[in-house]
Structures are given as structure tokens and as C-alpha cells.
Image 1 (cartoon, rainbow over the protein chains, first blue to last red):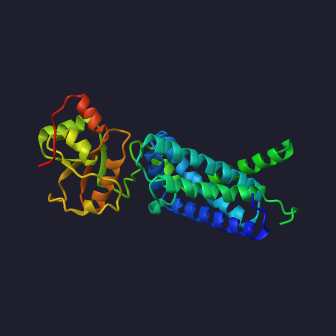
Image 2 (tube, chains in turn green, yellow):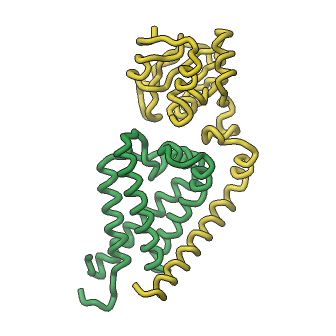
Image 3 (cartoon, one colour):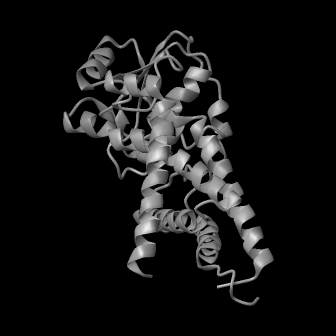
Length: 139
Length: 164
């Protein structure tokens, strides 16, 4: 884990920004996101629908908390869990050989492939770094 | 991690989830009402946003086929289409809306009844293609929910090979 104070702020800026952006795009098109979730062919229609209504808000709220530093450890812990979940979903989707868009960034989404796997892993790395960051330790 | 910190983390996470649910459900009351009223059971298409799209089941698809008035469109890929499709159907493989191959003009009147289908209830390309055709100005688009799977199971008329 990297324990540099400036990098810590940079990580928070990137992670918070990405999640606020991703969340807002989905909030503006809930049915589109519901369809994206349904495309994974894992969840029933009703769960896809309700998940699409509140998952983007979780992303935005956690993003805001990460940026502002409010509930920083809890929100970075939660985001790490969510990102780990996404990672699992990406791997399962790749193994199943499904050709779907990830739905991560609304209409700007990309196909579920190894690049997405790397991007998600990078975000998970940032998130875990924020979670484990200790102010008291020397740089 | 000790118990006290864990408890604090979980409390905050529950708070974040509750706040998100409040905001997410609170800002989408209209959509939730539509959902509870039976919409979005087959695809997430709002009847207000896409008034020309409706979902149909096997009997209606069969009826339209028998009357020979609708154009059947298969949205699966070319290989799947070649292996077998609804008799008389044309193939417009649909991956996403940015696929420029879709822009080939369908030379049928905009008010023609179109029946779009893919593999079956789990595939989504028929829904995607329907939205695309709606945006192209077609006014009577019906998504055949059971798709190729149901049609084949019922032993209804089919063809093999490319479309004509």
C-alpha cells in the first residue's frame, strides 16, 4: 500500500470523480441502466429495475464522501466491496462468454473484456489505498 | 479490525444504502408506479418514451405470421440466422446503437408492422433493435418475447440460410 499524503489526495480525487461521474450518468437514465443490468442475464427483471434506481446514488454518495473526506474509511471500504463485486461480475461474464456492454458509464460504456478488468482492478487498488491510509505514519 | 470499528463501518454503510434508496426511489416515483402497474416486465422501455414499441407473445406472433402482414426481423447474428429462422424473416444483427451497418434503410413503409425477435426471453438485442427502429420513425414495432426458441419449440414454419 502507498502511504504518501499527496498521492492519497490524488487517489481520492480520481476515485471520487470517477464514481460521481459514473453515478450521475446512470441517474439521468435509470431505464437504460436497468436494461444494462438485465443484459448480464443474472438477475430477474424486478431486481434489475430496483437496483438501477438506487445503485447510482450509492456511487454518487460514496464519491462525494471520498472527495470531501466525510465517512472516508466507511465509504472507501464500501466502494472496495462494490468494486470487488464488479470484478467478480466481470470475470463471471467473461467466463460465460457473454458479449455485453458493462453499463458502467451509460452510453459511454465499453464491452466487458480484459481492459475493463484492468480498469476495475486499478480503481479497487485506489480504493483500498484510501481505506488503509494512515495519517500518523511517516511517508 | 476490531469489533467497534467494524460496527462503525457497517453503520455508515447502512446509512449510505438507506440514503441512496431514499433518493433513488424518491426521485423515481413515477417509474416505480409504472413498474407496479405492470410495465417493464419484458424490457425496460417506457411506453411514453417509445410509444410505438409493444411486447407480444407467441399466439400474437403466430397470428401476425398467418395474416402475412408483418415483417419479421431477426436481430441475432448472421450465423445464428443462417442456422435457422422464422420463415420470411430478414436479418438485422444488432449489437449496439453505434453499429453503422444498421443504417441501411429498411425499404418498407414506416407504418408497416414489424415483429422483432432474437433467441428468446433472455436475449436483449430485439429490444435494442426496436429502440433503434423507433428512432428511425417506424410506428408499429412489436417485440416477440419468446423469440426463436419458442417458435422452434412449437414447430412453426422456419427457413435455413441467408435472407433473400
